[in-house]
Length: 314
Ligand SMILES: NC(=O)c1ccc[n+]([C@@H]2O[C@H](COP(=O)([O-])OP(=O)(O)OC[C@H]3O[C@@H](n4cnc5c(N)ncnc54)[C@H](OP(=O)(O)O)[C@@H]3O)[C@@H](O)[C@H]2O)c1
Image (cartoon, rainbow, N blue to C red; front, top):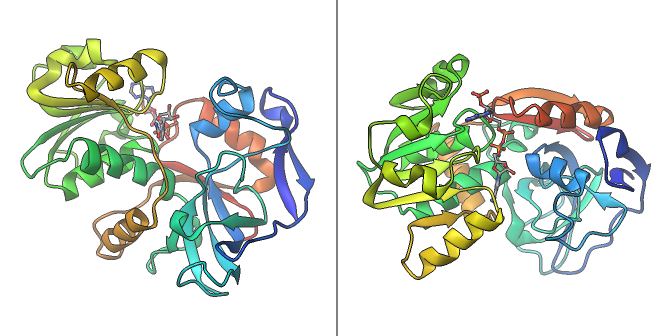
């Protein structure tokens, strides 16, 4: 099968398409023909070697976490799935790349794909929508009427953060560049702010939740924007954010790092909202797997609106 591999850290030119053995599966796993994957900033960080001190990395590195596809073989103890089922999900291991024609997955990382979406659309959901869900439902425990501010509202995580916060009943302030304000409003934002005109730290309001998706507003910069019981949540696992998050466990601070993991129950929840017309993916572009270097160049601009999906065999 064909697979994207990285044999040394470096620029987009180190991304290569190579032939590899089809993965073997155990009785607890599924073999999937991957139709689409989608790109995330983490893929770029892995390719550059920025995560080498945090993760055990072996070459060749296989990239990609999100996928959608069709089950081709199901282990006898791998849940309700059978060959031919359309599924979507995210792999929790960082070296079981979804940019491959065939993929080995565990049933707790996947769910049946939403019936009203194409597989290209379904691949744009798992990692970033589950991040938003964990931040707002698990950490902040948003209640109807809460006020939520999202910094980086037009990117991969942000477009789902707006929609999930609205579904949970919050009033949403979305921070993005002005050109993306119409999209943020269409997705449900009540207020939009252009960070070039109003830096987040200069906002006059206090929020129940400040979600720093983009990652340039740490707890110190944002604490005055929080109500007394408000939560600062970040996506960026740097030393300061991890320490702040640890101190919050002892109630010294109110800051948390969200860490996404795939969970079939969360994917089932997202599918229900999508099929009810409450949640939708935003896709900036679709590329064939052969153009993976171009996909990485676009992600590195930090200007992606929603997600970029990658056609593997679809
Ligand atoms: N901890 C976890 O489990 C987890 C999970 C998912 C993602 N992440 C991390 O979260 C971060 C965001 O991920 P993503 O997928 O949303 O990234 P992304 O799609 O690449 O984000 C692109 C967006 O960033 C916005 N942006 C650029 N400059 C900005 C600025 N100065 N202020 C505010 N927004 C700005 C852009 O909006 P405009 O063009 O409108 O300016 C663009 O829409 C990444 O660092 C990623 O690694 C962590």
